[in-house]
Image (cartoon, rainbow, N blue to C red; front, side, top):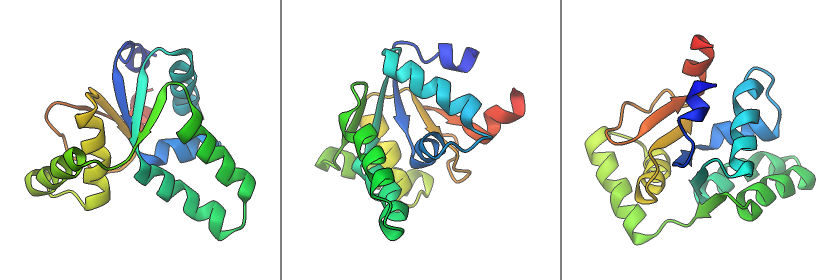
Length: 149
């Protein structure tokens, strides 16, 4: 996959939805997210995300008492060698505020993108239609990739 090869040696920001698709094995997205997370595990690229991702993915398992799923999410986000889950620092918060002003993003979206930008990501994987083209970072939109594959 050409889109995946282009990520080699880079830092990639990760939104919440692709992780959910991977862990919960959403069939339509598995041909994209399985190779992405496999390449990450092999060290082809580094992945960064916000602790906000942990908050978002744990809601469903906690609501339904699925401790196994909660552990799986926590393990991936907190124990993966090539995935860093970062707290919202003052620098990330300031960048997120600027992104809200410049691009009209909601706070969670701006925090996710700001985390990626502050960490030097050149790409950001999402499936959120609310993200517009943000200068300096390539958006990897899963539904968009499905259309070209």
